[in-house]
Picture: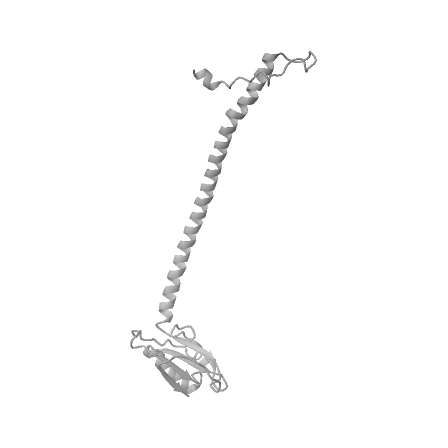
Length: 189
């Protein structure tokens, strides 16, 4: 019974070739039958194994690619996490002090007010001599400060030490033109 399962089905008589077409030359019926058996067995025996092997090989290749992509993504996440940590540390440092500059070589520490106490304050002319000192005082107290100046008489160097602080904003604008800002207090200088 195992031999019957392994052996290919016999060919019908119609498909068998005869020696008559060869003109008497060539092989006999048994040799032709064996050749046909071999042809039938090769695709049946080899092709499925090859396809399965190709599928396995393709799956393994895809898995390797996915593993490599996952590793590079996790490395990028680790790098991103390190970068994020550094950015958070820098933000914490910047949100707690001013940056030393040529005109203001010392560091001014800022208070960390809770949201309900911190006010958003607009200072027009905040880049001038008086305005910049007012901005320094308000920033040290821990408020959010928006400076609106057109730099006709003020200088950017007077407020440069606050430019990187998260609670400070600079708007280059002439106050003779309308501007819409939502603030708690306004100091018009």
